Image (cartoon, rainbow, N blue to C red; front, side):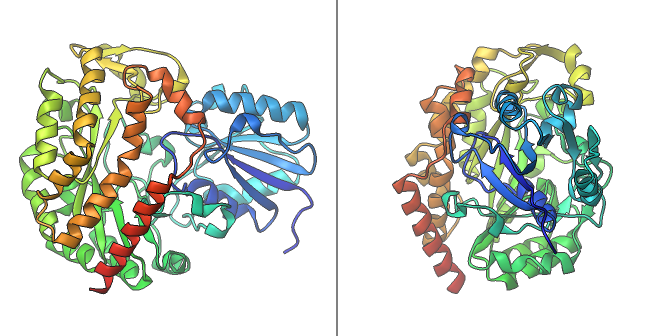
Length: 474
């Protein structure tokens, strides 16, 4: 097919944490590249302030915008408009889905939801120069992402240990009130057909796979089928995310083990039932089942990683100490800390005002890395200092090594565990280095600082890959 003379630039704005391959712009690029020359520029790898946009032959600048990089999106859009007044500026992603009116103050077009379902209509409108101001792609079964990793320049500069992203389903059947899934991927839970997955799975041979579905375990038959496909793909291993109680199945665990699944991330969030109830996780998380299911999963050689929501209702003076002891004893491979966040533009944002207070109205603060909402009775200073102490203990080298002995792994399996955890701790070392927990404005320094893999990280990844190959062949 003949390409248009004009090109499209897709701009991935800087975020923090960095270093993980993003699937979204790859999927958009795959839809557009049959009609235009498409280039992806990732400002996580370079300084956004040094960028000079092309002045001619660009049909569209597509910016992937979140709350965290809202300020950078505004400045870059003004810079583009000053240099290239003819090209359309399109904002897509999380923030345009939540706050389209705000985004239209700076962009010509906002794109919410999913791109693939209405890609054909959007491309036709772009060619005819009749773009609408707003587009929203609904979650429809026949339109799931088909990334082409050759479209992403400098792919070797990203973390290998976190894997190549693979999407096998969209949407979620649960209704945790802090989650944006039902805003971003409305209405349906859909799974990708096996034919579609088979057409792209060859790209993952010899690599580690990160299944990025919001809740991979909803459909047991789908989990087992995907696991079999990954097993045959030649991938070094994989990880995914699902609710903890969906793992309470011999059939699921057998399929995961046999396909070299290394870990499952679960949003445990808290070990306090009051805290879980406050965010409507009482249907998916029963604390009395945590230990039994975690030990069951680990007995299959699969590790559990877990989320921690910081600043929940019910937080008390011993919250972080109790959490550390529990996660350490259970051998949780990594703990992902996220501040309780109710994003502007969601229905729950106004609803929870009666239960607490918002500490800031700055859009860029609603990134999960900063404390923006405080439930009644929770102390902000304790939340920040408690989270800092937890990180210092949990992500110390001695903490990681001693925790690995709580998993009943073989020596080689424990080495893989330690190498992964040491790699993952980098993000939290940066939190401590920049003191973002006590000085949250420092997050913006981390957002704009280009990502560079250190020699130590490259060495860790190389050793980790060798260990995974040895385990795969043993």
